[in-house]
Image 1 (tube, rainbow, N blue to C red):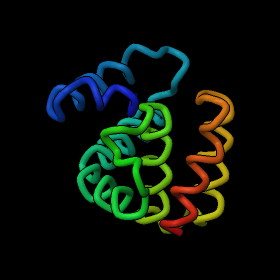
Image 2: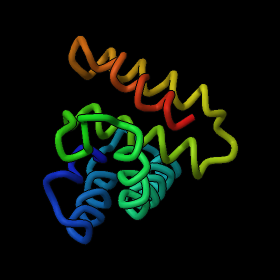
Image 3: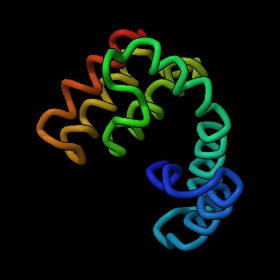
Length: 119
């Protein structure tokens, strides 16, 4: 759902997230509420997250990054900065693992490099 943020304005994005949570029958109501809440919070913080990422990424500003990599970086940065119960290394490791699964061959090292600069 966070991947969609690049293709919709913020108001439409929240509506899409809400609809996505309602469509997925595999999610419990509790899971849907958690996912929706987390997505909303991340979307609200995208300007600050992107600013922090742009400060440390040389030659690869957020507008130029692959959308999968950018989504994973945003999720991890949000967890690093705003989720006190998630250790920084856990947020980084999870983002790198997701990059291995969903990104390109270069995604894990790229995601790790950007996040390490922000840690």
